[in-house]
Image (cartoon, rainbow, N blue to C red):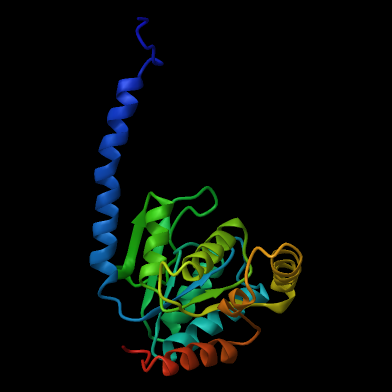
Length: 229
C-alpha cells in the first residue's frame, strides 16, 4: 500500500491549528469577563472610512449621545469612522463607551473615545462577532461596507432562526438603505419567496436620533424592561 504523502510542514500546520484553540478560548474568556460587567448596551456599526465632517459621522455621534442619555451604553468596533463617532458621542454624553478592536489594513489603532477599561482587542472576527451579539440590546446600523453588511445579516439570520432572542435592528439613512431593502422585498420575498413577510418586521428604517431612541424604548417597554435592566 502506498504511503500517504503530505506537503512539507503538514504536521507543523496541524500542531499550530491545535494550539490556536487555546488562543480562541482565551479571547472568549477575556471578552465574557469584561463585557459581562458593562450593563445594557447598543452596538453602532458603520464604515471605518467615514470622515469626521461627513453628515453620517455627525449623525452617528448624535445618536450615540442620545443612546447613553437614554440609559444605555454604546459598543462599537473600536476603530475610526462611524465607530469613532459612536464612541465619541457616548463619551460626550458621559455614558459607557466600549470598543471591540481588531487589526485591519485601514484601521491601524483604536479611537481615543473608548473607556480605558472597556477596550478589547481581538484577532478573530468570529469571536468579536459573538461579543457584539451576546452583549448588545440593539443594533444601530449606519452606512457602511462589507463588514457592516456582514454584521447586519448575521444578526437578522440569528433572530430569524431563533438562535438568539429578538432585539431591535435599526438601519439609519433612507437614502443609503432604500435600494437594499427594495431588493430584499422585491427579490427575496415577492419574486423568489426566499423569506417570509414577517422577516421584514425584524428591520426598522429611520433617519433621526429621536426615531432610534423611540424604537429602543418602545421595544423594551413592551418587554417590561428598562434601559438599566
